[in-house]
Image 1: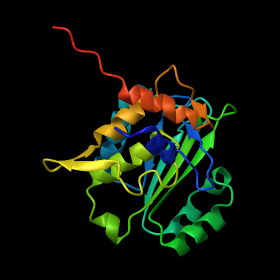
Image 2 (image 1 turned 180 degrees about the vertical axis):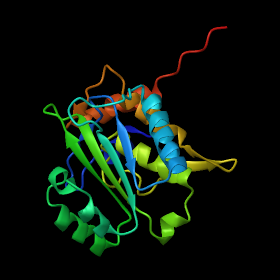
Image 3 (image 1 turned 90 degrees about the horizontal axis):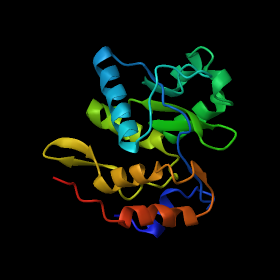
Length: 213
């Protein structure tokens, strides 16, 4: 299991500040740019990760309708043609130009409630040649993991959150355990002090109760 310093690194921003946030409301996903089969795969992956966290999903968000919007497309410029997206993503044109210039194939924008908990996430996935070779199930699970918490930019740089077991893509046990711990009701939905990582580490280190017969 990851140690406190590892967890601290996973929630440290590029500027060096610790910032943890989880969803403060039920997750309501909507997916654009895929066929029916892929839609079911993506929503299934989101539901699996939300259930793992012990969080909730809903049919609609009273404020936004849908609060997790996942876009699949071929070229970043396509985002500029999505109706009203520029109203939801400030500086969309500049963002598209920057991501296009960097050759990025994915990006996420989070929105937060007044307390700092996640209230919405916009996930953008550009299906380039590299992602074309990746199974839909893997892409879906990866996106679900990356939206469930506000991870630091380098959270998975050295250790991807997914692994392959007997030909099936699965979430690494240590990442799954961390997600479950992060949604412990006793812990805050938002934290800006690295001592929070110590509390997460303590939960990961605690022995799990034996199942009774």
